Image 1 (spheres, rainbow, N blue to C red):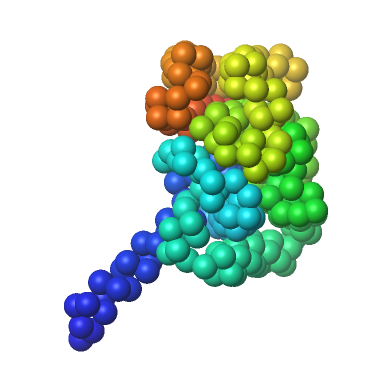
Image 2 (cartoon, one colour):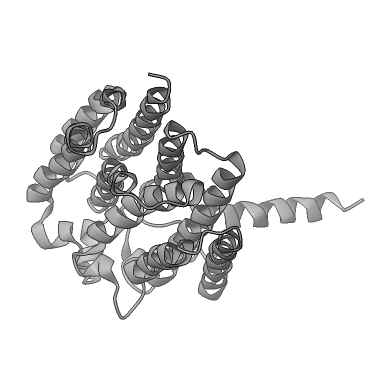
Length: 311
C-alpha cells in the first residue's frame, strides 16, 4: 500500500498535467470527427473502430497544439495577462510555476507523436492519404503558435484554425471511413470552421490588452475591439448561412437544418459580447455560449445527416 501523502501527491500532479492539456477544448476537434463520421454513416460506411482511431489521432494533434500554444505564449502575452478567464489566457501552469516550459514542450511532442502514430496505423490499414492530411493538421497547429510563422500574431490564425478544425477534419474522417475524398466531405466542415474561428475570435477580447502590449497582432488587436464585434457576429452568422449552401449547393439533406435550432444560443452570445466587449469578466458567458453553440450545432447537423440515411 502506498502512503496517503504519496497518493495525494500523485493525484495533484495528474491534476496539474490535465489542466495543462485544456482538454475541454477538445470539443473543437472531436465534434468535426462526429460530423465526418455521420456523413460516412449516411453513406452506410461507418466503422466504430475507425471512429475511435480518428478521435484518438485528432485529439493527440489538438492537445499537442494546445500545449505548444501555452509554451510559446509564455514568451509573449501570457506573463503580462491579468484578464484571465476560464476560456482564455492559457492554462497558466507555466506562469503559476506548476510545470516548467520544457515539460510543457515535451508533453506537446508526446501528443503530436500519438497523432503521428495513429496516422501510421491508418496508413497500414490502407489509408495512405491520411499522412498528407495529418501533416497539414500538424503543420497548422505548429505554425499557429511557433516561430518563425506564429500565424496567430500575423492575422492569419483564424483562417488556419477554420481549415484545420473544420473542413480538414471532416474530410479526413470521411476518407478514413470510406477511402474516398470528396468536396461534400470537405464542405460539411465549414460551419464548424466558422464556429471554432468564433471561439478563437471571442477569446481575443479579454486578451486584447496583453496581446497588444506583447505585440501579438491578431485581428482583434489590429482592428480594435469595437469593430471586431461586428466581425464576431458575422462569423457566427456565417456558420448558419453555410447550412443553406450545403443543402442547395452540395446536395445535403434538408434534415441538416436541425442545426438551426442552435441559433438562439448564438444570438445570445452575440448580444452579450456586443454590450460587454470591454469587460473581460462579463464576456465569459458569451465565451461559454460560443463553445456550446459549436457543440450543439455540430451534434444536430450530425443527427440530421444520420437520419437522412433512412429518409
